[in-house]
Image (cartoon, rainbow, N blue to C red; front, side):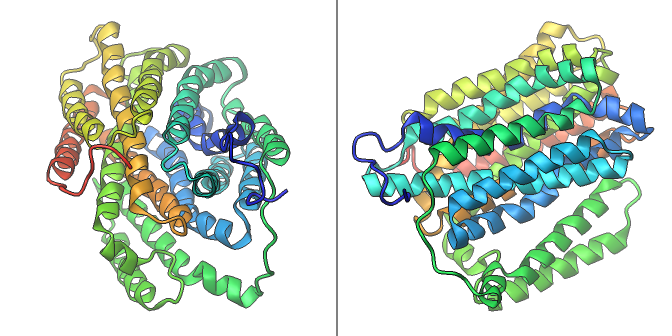
Length: 460
């Protein structure tokens, strides 16, 4: 049964259809939270620094930043369900690679595969949801879009204590091996409950290569990798990497403006500036949130001296509050108001972090996680609703992929900031350095919301 022939007149979004999509689009956040509580154990096992373990975070987001728009385009070319299933298969393989990794390099390979595999979930899920909504004439499916954010926040919440438990009982390999059952269960649900894609004409290999814009992908990857290489050790900058980044960006811009099917449609982005502002808000807010998610956890373990299991529990409220907040605002498709709250929250949370030290009461540390939980819940759901109104059905897959790419770029900058703040170990002074950057990001986010006259109070 094809998606277009599925009966959607009474219940266009039954639980069986939605559940696999929520599962697949949540695999990236659950991997983010689980790895956060295992970084110290990995550093000890392989004799690497806190800054080096940040490459495990960056590997996922480099791979995902490139793969997200590509997966959206592949979904449009071959069928969203097919690409969704391929992504889950890659995640399963990545779990095997990471669980039996003999060296730190193999862990990076595993995390890159996780990034590629999880990249398929969100853009294909959004494409499947948009197709159903348009067919049923439901408008913005606020509860379903909210469900994606809630599922991401809930799995992130579960991932923090689960990661601490897994690392405490089985060691760091469990943080990778968990992807094996996650991938298999997702495949089974999608095969059983998501209708098959409509039949499509075979695409010649030459046409497929042109549609994917492989040169554009390569140039974008080169830009991201050289930027990360430069940011990894900004205390002792390698200016050759910065020069490489500038050259890659310039070449990417020249090529994409000429390409018939550009990987990043610069002309479309130039015409749709509200969408560009949505991407920028998402990147900055996620940079602040991921700096807290990764850097704060490392500081709790090394600066505050808490075991991994306890640090995961301290951070648990962050994701729980995010899930609750996403649920509340998604029912009414709110956009502008929650984004204002998010900007204010980033500023206040960053300012509070500048006052934290190794002697700070643990209840206050938990309170800080609550602040950034509000930020995460408000940001992703509201920007997602804004994006839905700023794109067409044909663009939704690629546009959603670029939205996640913006999130990953934010996470990449967060990784670089952590490496700058914690060159050896997570210290109070390093945490304060990161906090000042977080405050600056919050100011920019707030201004982007307040000065954007085209940003609606709620989606339509």
